[in-house]
Length: 179
Image (cartoon, rainbow, N blue to C red; front, side, top):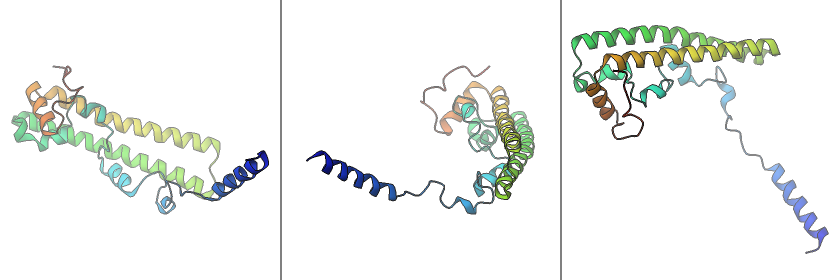
């Protein structure tokens, strides 16, 4: 094939592929109340749910208080442990709801600024920093509850928790548990 034919063929292929657009992964998201959060995420944040924020604790031998309470019989929790776990959950949920709602409100204001065309560098910087700070504080609330739960439980209870949650035998869970 001569150079001119090859160049024409290549140009045709490039032009043809340029017109073939693939939809964005975000297609359909413009209808969301808050573009950066799904309805489920908004609900989870408003209700103080963990949303996977505590995975470093959960998957490294620091049980979640809510799950530990749900496994009370399996873990053979004492009445004192159950009462303390209920207190940990109540405090965690209260603070997580407060922070989650603040995060949703911040994301709503950020979204609104872009929707209204009022977003500028200073407002975007402030709202982005606020959203990040709130996410970090929320994550900390959940992680601290896992730490408190780990200190409350005995090693055999943590091992039973790991088995019940399907983590037994996985690497990374056999380390120290701060006892």
